Length: 334
Length: 263
Image 1: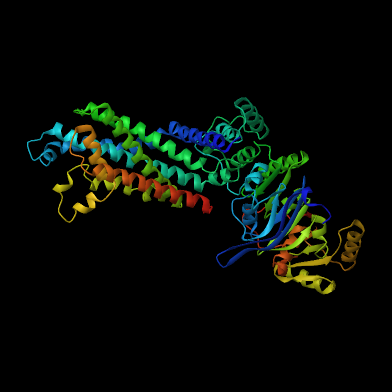
Image 2: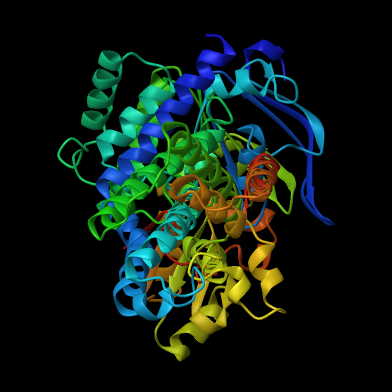
C-alpha cells in the first residue's frame, strides 16, 4: 500500500476480537482510502458485523491498531464518532415518533440550530422519498422505508465516513436498486463508504475494493475484476431433458464436465462470439441438440464459493441458495 | 462546546424525546396508573368499612381509612409508573436506537439521564392525578405545614428517582420489553405487602419482617407522618437510606450495563 496513513479513512492492523473462546476476528488488516467504497464480503457469521461494531466504536477490540478518520479508536473514540455515520443491520429508528421527528432528533443531537435542523431534515426526507410519510409514525413504515429513514438519519450530521452493515438485506429488488443509487450518490460527494454485504452482486456493483472475510480471516482482497481472476474462467452449459440424449452427448463431447443429476454439461469457454460460434459448429457437427444453452462468465459468486469453502459446487448452478438472496448469476439464456 | 453544556443539551434532547413518547402514547402511562387508582377505589368503597376496623385501634370509619390508605397508594403509584421506564429502556435497547446513539458524538450519559428525568416527571404527573382522585373521594391532609408538604414532595421525588434507576437497570437487563415488564412487576407487588393497606403490626409475626424490611413501608410511614401527623420515628432516615441506596445501586447497575456494550 503506497498511500500514507492520513489519506486512509479507515485503517486496521492486526484487528482481533474473541467472545469467550470463540475467535470472531483473527488478525484483520484493512486499508480504506478516503472517498472510496470498501466492501467486506462474507457469509453469515463470518465476523462482518463485529468488524463494523468495532470500527464504529460500539465494541472494543482485543488487539490491533485501528484508525478511523485519522483518529485512534483506542484513545479518541469521541473524535471518531464525530466523523462517522453508522447504519446497522437492523434499522435503528424510533418507531414511536414520526419520520420527521426522528430526523429532527438527529439534528438536535448534532447540535444544529433549529432552522438548520428543519432545513436538513426536510432536504433529506425529500431526497429519500419520505416527504409524504414524514408525519406518520416510523413504526408504520415498510421495511424499505425504515431502511431509507435509517440512512437519512445517518446522513444528518454530514459524516465523512459511513458504515453500512448489510444495507439491503431483506429489501425487495426495487428498494435494493434505490439504495445502490443512494450509495453511489454519496460516494460521488466524496464520502467514504464501508459496506458489508453477503450479496456478491452488491459488492460487484458498488465497491472499489473488496475483501472477502471467512471465519474471522481475510481470504482474498482486491477489486471485483482482480477477484474474478482468482477462479477459472467461464463456461457454456448445455442442459438436456432427455437422459438418453444427455448420455449420447456426453459421450460425443469428451472434453466436458458432466453433471448427471441435472443432465447438464459444461464446456470451458471465455464467452466470446468466436468461441461460441466454434462451440455451436462443434455441436452441429456432432448432431447434438441441447434443450437449453447458457453462457456463464465468471462472477463473484464463483470467487465467493471458491474462497469460503463451497468450492465443490462452485461451477454448478444449483448452489445452496440463501433465502431471499437475489444472486442472479450473469447468464444469458438462449 | 464545553462538556457540561454538551451534557445539558444532549440530555434535554433525549428528555424531549421521552416526553414526546408519553404525549404520543398516553395509553401506556394511563394503564400503569390504573392499578393504583383501582386499588384506591376498591379498598375505599368495597373494603373500606371492614379495613377501617383494623386501624387506630377500632372506632375508625371509612374516611379514616381513606386518610390511612392514600399515602400508601401515592407511593405505590411511583412503583407502578416507573415500570414504564423499564419497558421503554428495553425497547430502545432491542430496536438498536441505543446503539445508534452510542456511535454518535453525544454526551454518553444523556440517553439514561433522558429516561430517568422523563420517568421522574411522569411519576410527578401521575401523583398529581392519583392525588386528585384521592381529594375527590375525600382525602384531606389534616395539619401538614408548608415545610411538611415540601418534605413530602421531596421524599416522593427521591423515591421516584431511586425506583426509576432500578427500573432502568431492569430495562437494560431484559432481552425484550415483555421481559422488562415482568422483571419490574415486584415494583408494584412490594407495596401490596407493605404497610400501604394495613399497619404492619396487624400482620402475623413471621410476616412482619417482610413488610417492614423493604423500601415501601418506611417511605409510606414517613409520608403518612408528614401529611397526617402520625408518628414517624426512625422511619424517615430508613426511608432516606433506602432512597440513596437504591439510587446508587440502580445507577451503578444501569451505567455498567450501558458501558459494557450491547446485547
